[in-house]
Every structure is written in C-alpha cells, then in structure tokens.
Amino acid sequence: MRTSRLVTGVVAASLLGATPLALAAPAEARETWSTTTTAEPSADLVEFGEQVDIGLEVDSATGSSPVVGTSTLYARRAGTADWVAVATNSSPGADFLDVAPRMTTTYKVVYGGGTESDTVKGDRYASSESAPFTVAVKRRITHPSAGFVLEGRVTPRYRRKPVRIRASRDQETGYELVRVVRTDRRGRYSFRLPQRSGTWYWIISVRGDKRFRGAAFGYETSVF
Image (cartoon, rainbow, N blue to C red; front, side, top):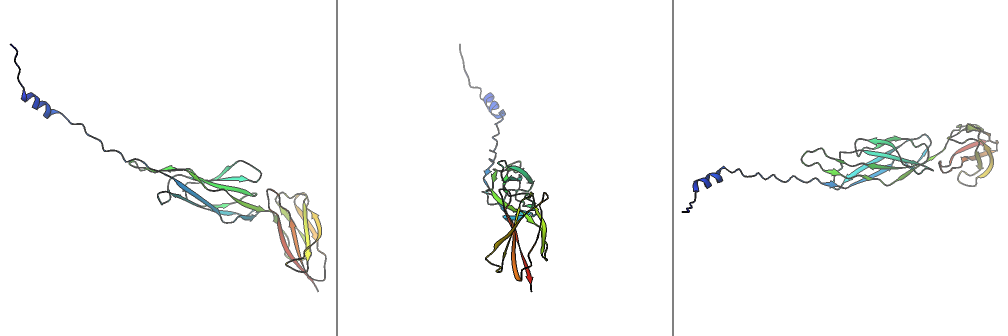
C-alpha cells in the first residue's frame, strides 16, 4: 500500500541551511574626457640665434586641466615634410622654454592623453594636438656702430651672396641703391661708405629665401 507524508522538518532544515548569493555592487564606470591643446609662441619672428618660449594650455571637458600624461613639441623645418619630436614635458600643461629654431620652423604640440591612477575610478583623457604655428627666422648681420668702414658677417649660410647698400637724405623714404658687395666663403663683407657732405642715412640688407627671412640694419653718417 502506497503512503505519502510531508516531512516538514526536513524541508525547514534545508531552507534554513541555504546560503544566499551575495550581489556585488556595480563598479563605477570610467569616463573618457576629450581635451583641447593650445600653444602660442612668445614671438613669431626672431633673429638667428635667438630663442622663443612656447606657452601651452591643455584643457579637458571636465573644466579642469589633466595632470596625467605628457605633451610633446614637434618641429617641421622649412623645406621638409616630416614632423620631428624636439622636446617632451612630463607635466601636460607646462610651457616649452628656450626653444631655438635654427631656421624658419613650423611647430605643434601633441598631448598624448592619460589615465588617472585612482583604482576605483581612474578617468581617461583623450589625446589632442594644437594648431600648427610658424616661427620665422631672419639672418643675423653683425656691423660696427660708427665709422665709414662697414664690415661684419651674415649668418648662417650666406657664402658669396649679395649685400645691398642703399642711401637717402631722408630717413623715412627715397633710398637708392649705391652698391652691391658679396660676402666671402665665411659670410663676411666689407665696404667703405663714401663721405658725403651732410647727414646721410643708409640701409644695408640681405634677401631671404625659403629657410630664412631677409634682414637689414640702418646706419647714419654725417660730414660737416
């Protein structure tokens, strides 16, 4: 004969002994923030041998500047197509100081992005780069400060090239070409100014090319 009964004690014991599964709290998702890099030189035209400082700002969509990652200064010299890394700052928004372009050069700054080290929620910052900007370099002409003998040197790379001498009685206008002399193989020039009666104004100049801007200096003589 078949019989059945409900064993309530066993069922109760089974329920009481069960261990419920713990539900983990969802981890807070990491955010990736866009960034903006802005770079500006202290001067856009310098004489050969001079330096410029490049001011830098790296901002993010959070409203504050990232403190992780590096910024790299890239240069592209006149007549070339390749960008070359010339300096890197470990602080993303730090300025690049004492940059010395050897010829007319186009620059840009690239922020490489980074992730905060917070183990719970380390926000990420996307990379960005500044708009390119150009620092033009003009040649340097050394010269005396007084006297009728003009001699000096044009640098860099001005071997056996023309130096033009122009003169005028008016400092502002009316200059006429007096003579053209050529530098030697080291870029040196020499010329004796004519001792014209009265006060005369002179402009001594060299032309530019794709790598360097032209340069000039003014000079004054008086004979009474």
